[in-house]
Image 1 (spheres, rainbow, N blue to C red):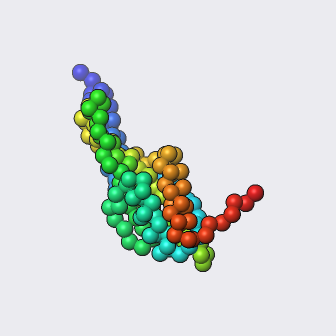
Image 2: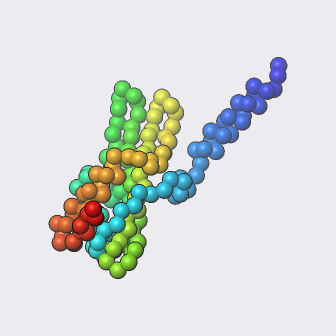
Image 3: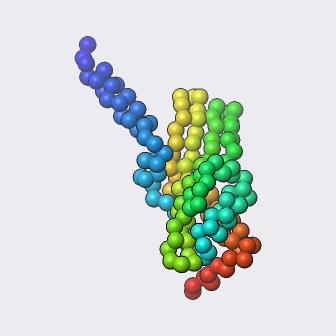
Amino acid sequence: MSSRPLTALFVLAAVFFTGCTGTWSERLAETPPQVRAYHGTIEQVHAAAQKAFKRVDFNVTRASIGRIEAASAIHSSETFADSRQVTARVQMRELEPGTVAVEMWVTQEVASQSFGGTHRTARRDHSFYGLYFAMLQQVLQEHGVPQPEPKG
């Protein structure tokens, strides 16, 4: 019997398991964040960002000035025998006095019994970005932080 099929199987297994390693930060580094700029101080934007996560039904899991991590509820499907959760990480930095850049990475985690395990995928395009950034702007406006007029 030829050893080629066995070698190919080991190579495929190595590639598969190599792709499953790595930290959340390493995977996020591969996907650029979506960025929006808002008027206000980092403290004002940070407080509004936490409130915006709560309004879109995300739980803040970690927070320090300029950084927030949050997660959606876990959605399970008996039909597909899996569960899904969206997680978001926000980082803020001052662009200039009175303007803060908000960078966001969104990741989707899927745990599946039929496909054997959990996998995490950083999402460059996800509907949550637009929803969250609009909610953040709304919260800032409610707190009296003026937003720039659209340029046109």
